[in-house]
Length: 246
Image 1 (cartoon, rainbow, N blue to C red):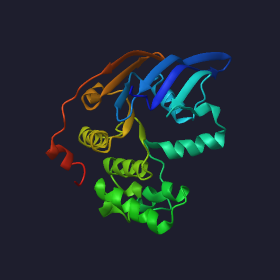
Image 2 (cartoon, rainbow, N blue to C red):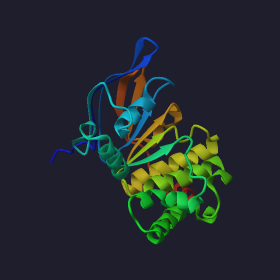
Image 3 (cartoon, rainbow, N blue to C red):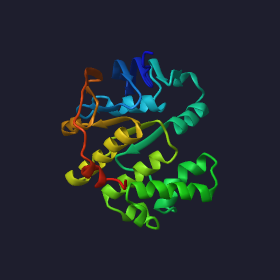
Image 4 (cartoon, rainbow, N blue to C red):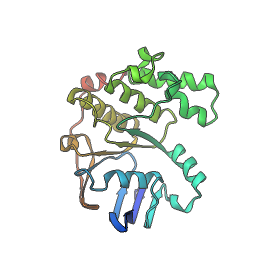
């Protein structure tokens, strides 16, 4: 049977009004993302990468075109249905995470489970499993802002995964990290792709990350200039063990 894309973007156009002018940001975007693929969306600042990501998430309604997630056109849904769909289907990691200041690390990881209706006890237990997986369990009673940038991103990844979504979207998740912490986080995403078979779309302007991905989408001036499917070398078991507890 022919493999179906988990995300299908068809003829997406999006413009923003600036003063009296209409500025095109996405220009006739077409893209298929298949289950288990690790896709990088690359390009210079202002090329439309983050807008495309927000369009996939249902946060930026396109002027025309369709976004299909598991063959469902998300913009045919009402706003509250889109929000519910986003919560069910996506895990999201940003460059700077929005933490709930009154909650500690474990409670922040568990928070999406509270929204899903899980009891506090079960939510905390599940959050601790993911905190252990990403080596932040020792900080469970800390506030996230007390952690380093790399540690915070590990917490953010754990929070994105705790509801077990099929798709992880990440917008410049290493943008504020030093090179060592950034590589650590990229290995974590690669692990999710290899071991958990998550579909990952990661926005970055860093060409050094190409080696982690199975598909590289290059954008320029609101357009997709190239799409490259590639085979990549497997990360060694020792490298993975530096990132997660196996």
